[in-house]
Length: 245
Image 1: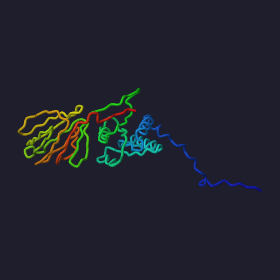
Image 2: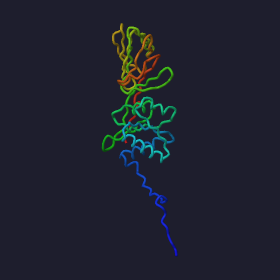
Image 3: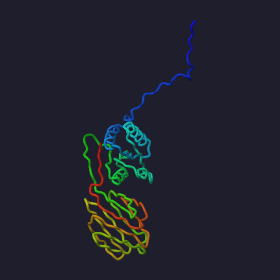
Image 4: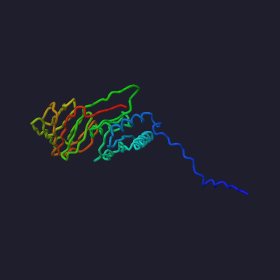
């Protein structure tokens, strides 16, 4: 007599759930993936995201979609120093998953001199936009970018000096301060000091060297560093490229 036995329940193969399409998590992911993959070539895509759950899920989904196309991606957050993850990496584009409330994706793209891909603000086609930026290069050659303006201020003006060099002129200013915005390929610079009334100049590039006291470097309203040594500021017309997709 033939008999049959059922396999014990723990030995039965588990049913595999159908793989979820990451693009279903957020509608713009499909177009962002296509644009990022087309821009990448053999390079890496930087994905900027926030810390909230939705942003993390969207970043993971985008990374998974790009991985299926053999496109490497690195996630960057607003955490201090996070952008160092792309040091030495050949980045083709920055994808903005943070939204319009943060300048970090745009500053990172301008610093890397690549385009930033961002979801369309609404229905219909949106044209690529450019924006002038201020490049900042220190004595070590390290490059940074400001999107709106920069300022240098002395913590104790009575003890500090600021030496400015531009267009063949050099001036050392006791208690000196400086601020600058960008328009096209020129900086609009204002400076002054304890013994110097405010002065305005237009120049493509200006070098500022701090001495005899602590100075603070402010970028886009945010103090970012104690200012020591020298930094050269220059105008970069169209230095930021934003492509809605």
